[in-house]
Length: 122
Image (tube, rainbow, N blue to C red):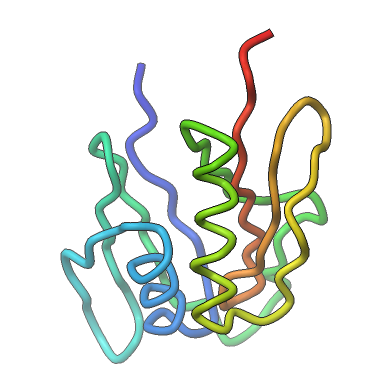
């Protein structure tokens, strides 16, 4: 079984789509409505679907919810961090070593926590 897609409700579909296409290599395939839907294609056939949050009701992500990207090396993690920093992404903490991984976290528009990491084989 292969994971096909993830559908994330966000307040600003266009801003979140721009974040993932600019910084994480997704390709924008389709948009619908007035900032209501975007389909992004990632590597390996994975699709990221962004939909506009409903106007009413609780729609927050759980405290520990995040999207994780696994990179091929520690150098790649540091390079990704440097690209985000050079792009002026705000709230970017330094790269750290936690739970056996070199990683950093960053918030995408809409409050989505994103982890970028490399885990060395044990």
